[in-house]
Image (cartoon, rainbow, N blue to C red):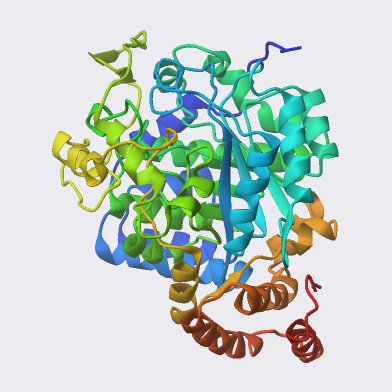
Length: 548
């Protein structure tokens, strides 16, 4: 049963007070905060607020160097790969930024058990070992029984040497009892984005449906923890409100989880708003520029050093690679955001533009008419397909410049020209199921992996911590001290070797073997290094799934 609660751990007044001081910090102040952050013990909300005001190139470089050092101290040069699996687009919510919103008129569907198997087989053929399950909220068409069946089917599906070893789940906020059922289904991390921590903007973005309840959504992680799920992932959708407010909201949420349960968020995701069916970006005045986005990633790495940070294929390849260095530890690869899209693209052939890109044509097309009630002090924009109310007097400063696409706007509010560039990047006929949003990195996992290896990273498919019980406070003990490297480095090498043996192209195998040789030398313990070499030999003899 849904319980009516109000949570006060996102102190709106306090955040507004911190953001009222919009003065630029001098280089010395940024250096002092960065030096403290290098200890990898985190930053206070006030220190984060000061870094958010930094704009000078010299100050940002100080910030980036510190973020890079902290990331490598805790997570090394590893990047964990995963893929999302969208299995139902039925939804009773009317979120104005989402392609699955209730008022969008398109054929809804969910995957059958056989279709789940087909999707998973395609993903396993790419080399994936961990998935993030995604669906709309619909208790009739997508009930918990069905979600449990999907999870069970995924774990049971095998293709040659392939298997999915960890299923993370991103479903709507639910009850403690349902979270217990997810725990029993052996999920990895439970992930849920607050979307925006700013209450008036949240109300404007979620005009109807269960998700309209800010506090029910915000309390989801507390209920998940109560149910025994000790690995949770939080996030905000950057572009709905002032990014500075959202960064502080994420920090306060992390502090709340850490102080209340002794376990902070296992991951923080940083998606940027993207075009979707019935969603055009010029109606969102807080789009985040590349410059500000890179800054906020670096600041979050310094503020919450122990957390995994996730970057999706929403970002274009060149910029995505640039952001890795300032804090990202997990990335999606080869992603499709439509129900059944992996199977369809696999059948259509690699020479055709991915399903999600074709479906992004709907970013410039409205379906149905929706009107959201304006929040106090808000302006209203209504058009066929979408109505958006955005608070104008409740945030500090204004939104940052650009859309998510290939160009950067200099204006502090997103411009129609920038939004048109983003939405117009993929205007083709729609020939597949509706994607939830458009992706911008269409490279295959093999192409991404080769690029990572050339850049000095070690791609990882490791799921050992989850299967060895290193979750929750046990994971945090390793992560907060940086000791996780002694386990993650050899496990990354072993899972990467599996990929090279079973899935890699000849070119990727060549650069990957060189990367393994280099990264073996980074294992601190000679004994562990020697055992890793021995296990690599066992993999070459046909064994699989070896880990520390």
